[in-house]
Image 1: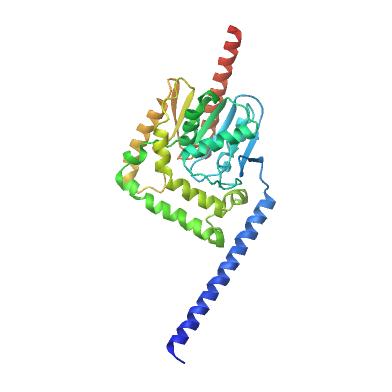
Image 2: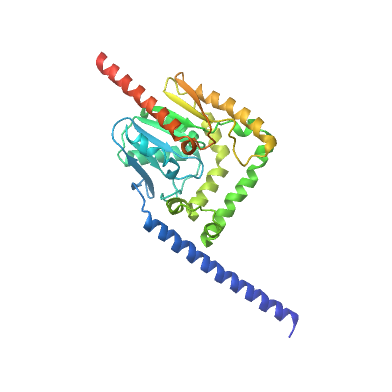
Length: 331
């Protein structure tokens, strides 16, 4: 037998094995995802916003309503330690941006401007009246600032939870920005391997079935990549959003002694120094802005120190209710 025929047989054999493994992986991913979602049904509701649906989960009673916007690639679950406590003193809603968690994918670009406009439509179509207290974590800070810029009359207050700054990529150490390409590759790996179940099999989806049900999907992985690639454009959009005037604003910043765990050691201090400077600048977006350092907390303050987030929201709720009561007396 000629060597070329052997090579063809080997190639066909390997290709067949690859197809079978891919099919098995796809079945594993599909069946596992369906099992997780049956065991842990979606809370809240799906709302049509013009040909696709978005997931929103509201609890509690009272006004003003608090709207929780997660960080890049995160679902509504990132607020699970915060929402139940806020619901004890006012209405609070977490949601999934289009493509994340239980929300359908969107035909629109994944910039913060588009995200803010989708959120506005979601709140309107869900029948959730303003005025809102917007709470944005990390990149979610871009979303809520642009929301306030476009719909200022509908926003009563804001909490920025270790929020991104529009100039951070310019002001961070150059070596840190060089790592961005690696982070994008990591996210693309999840995107391209999720359909065949590799991230789930390798434990990248974690051991919490509630989190897996919402986040261990191809659509969520794809959305995270899209948001990451559009991050510079979202930053540029946010840079034009302007001042918040005298809006009640709380800026919550992570503890400088608890830095991001995946930073190289030589970048920890210069990155934290710049971050703290930018956090102080965010607090100056409003004449009523304050800043709180969340001791013993990393970037995810709502997970490490949920009490700090809850207290900040409560202070603004109380302040707005007092303002409303005083205005009623004057009338």
